[in-house]
Amino acid sequence: MMLPENNRIPERVDTIHLIAVCGTAMGALACMLKKMGYRVTGSDNNIYPPMSRFLEEQGVLIMNGFDPSHLSSKPDLVVVGNAVSRDNAEVVAAGQMGLYYCSMPQAVNRFAAAGKHQLLVAGTHGKTTTSALIAWILHWAGRDPSFIIGGILPNFNSNYRSGSGDCIVIEADEYDTAFFDKGPKFLHYTPDAAVLTSIEFDHADIYRDLDHVREAFGRFVTLFRPEALLVSADDNADVIRLAGRAACRRESYGLQAASDWQLADIRIQAPLTHFRILHGGREYGCFKSPMIGMHNLKNTLAAVAVAHDLGVTPDQIAGALERFAGVKRRQEIRGEKNGITVVDDFAHHPTAVRETVQAVKTHFPNNRLVAVFEPRTNSSMRKVFQQDYATVFDAADRILIRKPSMLQKVPEGERFSSLQLVADLKSRGRDALHFDDTEAILADLQRTAKPGDIILVMSNGGFDNIHERLLDLL
Figure 1 (cartoon, helix red, strand yellow):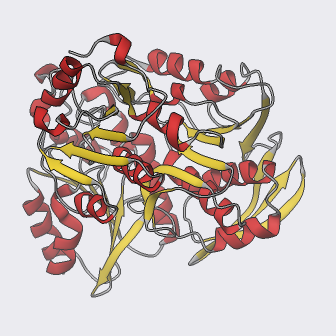
Figure 2 (cartoon, one colour):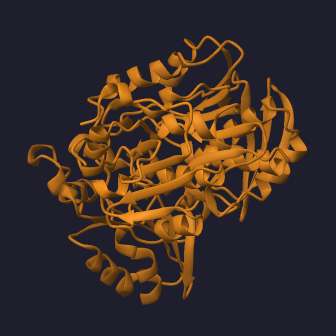
């Protein structure tokens, strides 16, 4: 086991090894470190494309599995991903060798964010899209930002960038940091500006209840220096309460007339959504975006507030928004076959599922919407949201629910029941079906899908590559 006093980054670092390097954020960090001139290696279990290929293309040496021999070169620093535990073979070896170690956010703060204006996006929902919007607006405005975000941005074909500008955009996650640091990742940063989108119960594997989540975000709002800016949503009571405690500049955003930043005159004219923005009650500008759904308009509004504070003009913002290509796995159209469109989304929390289903239906009001859902997260496989899920699919015309594939990870008395969810949906008059596996869902869709259907697939995992397999079958 590592000694606590080794949990720091030494002054001089040339070689860095990342344990569990194939995670989205860890992989991005490895590439950023490589580009900055460090000698970087990494290890992980079950290495497979696309992340393995991506890392290799960036010159990061990847070693399969976890083995003490991977540390034989005695790197100056070991970055430990939160996917590994204290009994990991490389963790144990690093401790025995007396190597310095740190967590992923510690490394981001020291290496990628050093000397830069830190722009954070925190909250239960909307972090990835809002972070991506801020990064793209700044890039379009010629500010060449750095960023590290939990999703691939098609505008950059990457989830990270080491820019020459003075800003870095960081998706500030509330999940725990590492086995040796159970606090949320966002506590390792010092925000110059931040967005707080929402606060709801999630991550049931590390948070006891909503009060525990509130406590974490309560610590987040204490990070701000007086000159920093906190941009907070106007439709979440916990966000409003906590934002009021922040000892910094504060601005609110949303639909409320009293908010500093307000959406108005929203009009859908596919493929674009048109809207006006008011700032301080006055006209700020007219904009259009390919993003769909009210939740994405709010994400956009938050990004505009941050960009404006950094001196980006409304014209620059308008040009960026119209050309924003979204984020992979966020209402991403994966393909169309025989008039049937397959859409992929990362939604898994009940609120995110509701907003996503509603957004897609609003954008395609004359099409039959088939919602396919796989409960896969540590929260969605628990019964904490059992009743909530029964009301979030109402905008869908058909609802297909897969039995969670990893229920054995959850204690028997805490498990979510997909059968019960389908029964609850049917009791509310919804057309819902339960499936034990992905193959059965594919068979149903091959038999029942028809031209004009929008098939919305929601999961935070690969879902057995259902999207490509479905497109092949249609």
